[in-house]
Image 1 (cartoon, rainbow, N blue to C red):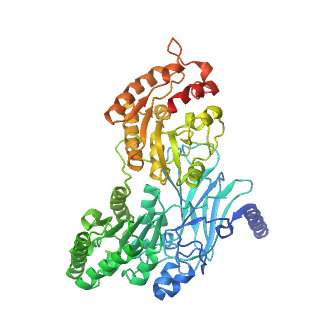
Image 2: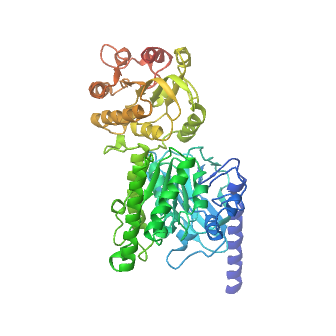
Image 3: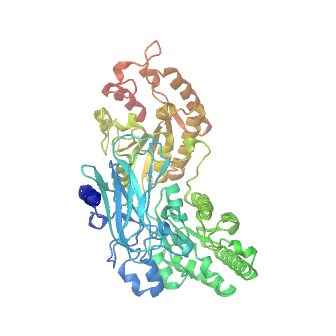
Amino acid sequence: MKRFLSCISLFVLCFMAQVAFAQKVWYNPAEASGNVVRGRTFIDQERDGFYQRFPSYVKEKVNSRLWAQSTRSAGENIVFRTNAKEITVRYTVKTSHAMPHMPATGVSGVDMYSYDKNGNEVWVPGKYSFRDTVTYKFAPVEIANTRKGEKRFTLYLPLYNEVTWMEIGTEEGAKFRFEEAPETLPIVAYGSSICQGACASRPAMAWTNIVSRRLGHPILNLGFSGLAYLEAPVIDVISDIDAKVYMIDAMPNACSLEYEQLRDTILQAVHQIRKKRAETPILLVDHLGYPHGKAYAKQRDMEKRAWDAMAEAYKILQQEGVPHLFHLSHEQINLPADGTVEGVHPSDVGMVAYANAYEKILREILNEPVGAMQTQQPVVQQRDSYNWMDRHLSILKNTEKKHYKRIIFGDSIMHFWGGAPGAPAQRGTDTWEALPGESLNLGYGHDRVENLLWRVYHGELDGVTADKVFIAIGTNNITAGASDDEIAEGIAFFAKAVRARLPEAEITVMAVLPRRGREDRVEQLNVRLRAMAKENDLKFKDQGKGFLLKDGKVDESLFTDGLHPNGAGYQKIAKGFK
């Protein structure tokens, strides 16, 4: 009887599991409209497999071993938005799940990240099962310090395996949509197994993925295990890719070449890229320096030969006047003694050290510095109810190669004024449309100074020109607890970023508008902003007095809520933006 009841219980449990499984809704990236897999090259070309990094035609140009490595999904990721509490990823891969020196979670696993309302990175661990079909389950997903509703997630694909099929599932009734990859130029990383991701414990810990998360720029991973020799056919394919930066990190493999051959190979590769890409920055990277070089003379001599050959090649290229050329040395990489798994491939500790060095030099190359204050550190935000990232991507798509009379950066006060793309509420469209010349509204609800900085670093001024730029930001930083100095210095930092991209434009800092209950604080901040503008050769305008009554309180007839102007308030505002 007990055995019979046990069988019945097992049957019921299996049936319930099947019902729960059936109630999921599944989404296949290969069936989505548009390009939803980031980290692939030449997306308009035919491919042998959907998740392969190269299209089919490359197979005839490179050797078969490199082609086999290129079919693996290193660096690829999928971005989606959902309000689901349960997210399941199921997929199949082509080869063994693990390697002796690299776990299944890195070789064949996936990795998921999101961020909180302030742009802080949030790793979402999953429960995994490595069988014929690999499964990761993330539940119940409740990202701390965020609004209710949809969240944005990035799913990183396996580093050392080829994905042949994948689906993402949510509970029935949950919202879900893939985010199409923006048509922005990638940073191209060409290198060895270390570039491909060996031996990160999970995909997001590969140094290319770490740097991509920190910078917010796509990095195209062209790491090929044991096969980075700067061969002309491979460099030819790489230089076909229109990139933001080319990072050449082949020394862990190419160091086996003799000194003169290695030097000449480096020179040839740079000249080959320059024939197609005359201005794109090229970053040449030293051999990182293996820890076992301190113990074994053979490795020590090989590394030294690579460093010397790189130094000579770099010097020759500089003497030739090759433009936009940079060098990352092994001293700058500064790999820790305990930073590898087996003396060669970085552990997660080594990957972070590698990423630190890359981030620093890439920020110099891209002119995207960060400061010590929170207001000087570019971040995205997830406080919005209107989809902050969608607004950003829409602006990138619709503003390129345009000239504006004025560009206005700000928060919801500017967002709700007028212009396209439209805001959830627009209360001053008549005065917006009456402004002389074409205007671009770059106000985003809930934005702080640091969010404006991220947006400029990610293209909102690329390809556009303007007569005037107005910066109207700061009230949300007050709410977040920032000091007057932090706000003022953050705006000064942001103004420098604007000036670097639009050197001919007149830049004006707008005083923060008075707000109910914080009139004195806003007045104090504006005194600081006026002084900061003068110190940085910026114009300053203060329209706040017109929004105050004689008793120093806000004139409620000009606001909808003591913070956001109504139509009459925008009439007053418009005068300062002509």
